[in-house]
Image (cartoon, rainbow, N blue to C red; front, top):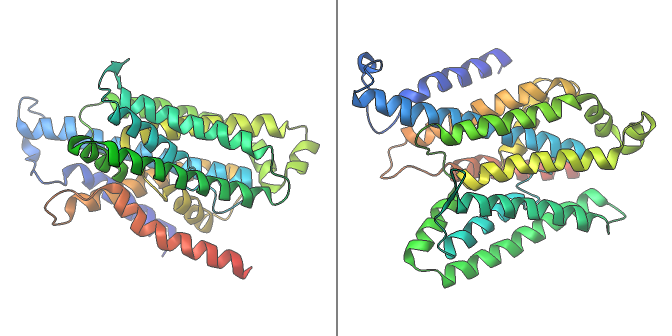
Length: 321
């Protein structure tokens, strides 16, 4: 399948996505701002598509960044347990019954963000004790943290009441359903920070993709730059997951797909990865809304169905090399 066909298909789906859903929209009434069709389109559908695009861009760029910094095809914020940390943080907020708002953000979002950032700093601290096979060991640390967080989440399920458990289950499945433009605008700021941070250090990132020694010989302070980019990426992921819940495997799939379509250096794939990730997640979200089901299929389930087999494929292909 050619690049043109892939891009044309994804862009076409993105353009049609705001018109897809349980409620039908009368196109003739879109500019009548007091009509129901206009309210659905501008307050529900368009913010959701925008949110999905930005979420996909953040996940894809974070995956590209982690895989480049650690030179490991399996490294993503999802596999390193950062998303799981955000879920546990949100679960604690739900269990404590915190519903207050701070600067327009709910306590659940703030606790989710703190859980993600705590995991990042914990991984950075534990990485100091790794000597041999650091990348593989760090991946195992991330998996161990994910298992620990899952066990802690089970404790919250056991202690929670029916309402709390229902909220927690829905959150862990992931959702792109937003009302209004507040959360999409939050992601606009976060996405711009992430893209600018990666783009400003794109040449240093290209050197780091080869080896730390190559980057050091060119005058790059590898540890400082790696820590900075990890914090920025984890800030973006923590913000996203605290709003939408975990959406797995996008950061694993998209960088590999883009590298197959465009086998060039990392610095030339940054914007392509962001665009492809955004359009891919819009396509997945559109699929959840066109399926004939009693309730909307959570986005996290769709990406897991696609990403699970892809993850297995990567492991097998790495072992063959």
